Amino acid sequence: MRSQGKNYETPERAWQSDRINEEKRLRESYGLTNKKEVWKAQSMVRTFRRQVRKLNAEEDETQQAELLTKMQSLSVLDEDANLNDVLDLDVEDILERRLQTIVYRRGLADTPREARQLITHGHIMVDGRRVDVPSYLVHEDEEKEIRVSPGSKHIVSNE
Image (cartoon, rainbow, N blue to C red; front, side, top):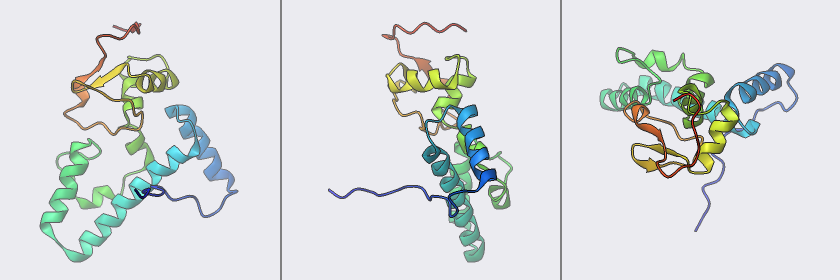
């Protein structure tokens, strides 16, 4: 079986203080473990932008509608958004949709790091199934279905 390879692009310049400081800020505020998680989110935004530029050139209505539907189901775009709004996305829009961030924002954990630990230890359920991947992108319809697992001994302080 063949591995998939990297699903992110590394920065072109290794030592750029502005970029390094921004990555550090994102890591601290979202509880990420390393810069690779920031690079994955940046690559995802970059991929969406490339798709939009390609679809604008081809003017394929069905693929444009599919991409907009996908972005709206992730709650990254509003219902009345168009393709040009995808070009305005930034990394924080993607990081806000991570399961780790949503668990923390909903008060199921006191810190982003605690949210990450709860998820990796299997204490969080999304739509009735256990999810143990902190980087899981939560769709709009799944967001209401995030719960602590019934068999979990974790006590949520904000409930």
